[in-house]
Length: 335
Image (cartoon, rainbow, N blue to C red; front, side, top):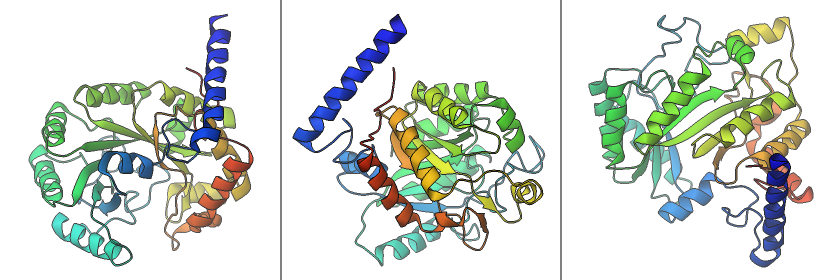
């Protein structure tokens, strides 16, 4: 009975938001005329302008590669540790930032950036090495945010203390690669840690006020739509502030590619992906900022799905679908 009342309450809230749309040209209470709470919306609210990401490499590796946890890495991960668009580790962080800013500002006037340590596991180094890298990044006055991609099993007490310290200077975001909550899939992709490790990491990061962003992968082999929605529903009730929804990419020279060649698994076409992405958005807690809805793997490495290379087309098709089907973030979210 309580569950039924909760659903009725949320449906009433959804109807209120729906009616508000005609008055305020919005369907999501946290959005600015959009149907989902985008990173652009959040940055404009917080910093007064769009903030552009600079992808950096700190020259690190991963415990899932060097033998501490495993040796092969996650099954889908490229040789660049999913940092194929990051700067060169041969350059200093300041030089990577300078080059990244030059590339972006040549196309448009930009004044605010996110220093995003993307390649490999970016807390997997001695804390003094991390301190030097992070401080070099935030020393640039146009860097507004320090964002760090890492694993939840690489956040020791000394690292947390460092993140707490830097968070007093500039905002720190930590991006955790969860991908899925299902143990069978986690074992297949060789994630290398239990769900309880992720939960503890989120708890400890939030205790010191760090913004947590979670990476999920849609259409992992063997997962049904219900399985993927289970991950969304789980994250809805975690203390996280952002999410990246990423379609699985099959990249050459990965173990996933070898598996795909031997035993081809289902990869959605653009229409199927957009339809299910709309479902995920409808079920997602409207307070969670959406940092990514699709991706574009390196064209020289991408085996499938090739249609993701045209990112703008994918997003335009998604926006049309959301409007046509009257979908907005949180429409099917149940507390």
